[in-house]
Image (cartoon, rainbow, N blue to C red; front, side):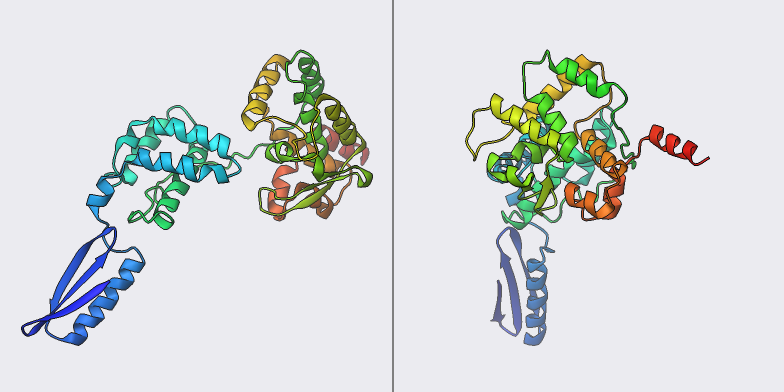
Length: 334
């Protein structure tokens, strides 16, 4: 808030704004004083004034992370994974610094240190919740941060999009290994992913009330892109649901596959290790399913209605035709 007072033959302007040090200036003309006051208030509204280092010095980066974990994460879909990422980051020495000290240079040093052990793509994924935390702190919590220090951090990520699909014998190897697993839901979850092209989070969020067996369909009320969609159920997908219903005695509002994301991830890692399969992620099953849809002759709009893609360029990134089938088709034309 601007205050203008006359002192002898001059006009003194003082700007006070919570979280910022007060600034003042003296003018000979009242019009000049008012114009400067409007300019400084506009800068304050845009958070362009220098922040109060005293206030930022009293808050550590670690304490901001703790607040973000407690207040923001419970409302997010990927809370379990982000909680693990942020707690691991919380243990790093950078979190002992105050907000007055922290800057992009500190994160550049952190980046260089982490890139010795993980890929740039993994680091970018891990820094994403940290960057969002700074935005929440600035825009919702009123912390007078001049900027998000991660906005200007250089992190070059190669576009190494995956084209991994199931190879011959791998599904059978997974089924054989699943016979010896302690979690009977893992293999049904895998088959269901192949039949529906659903994401891991969508599968785990599925409730019995979302399934309409008379119509052979299920509804995803909110997907990753924020839209709902209806997915047709194949005969095999319905058989999986019948199998799961015998394993899980749950009500209509309960999960079809009652597992946490971490539990499924650990079970998947153990299963692929036991099956002797390398470099296969659970998300690759979505690649496999979408590619199979195209190979069955479904049109692009039909596949998009199942997968939920609204950007055709992104859809084609998931669609990878079987090289063996392509070779067979090419040989038939000659």
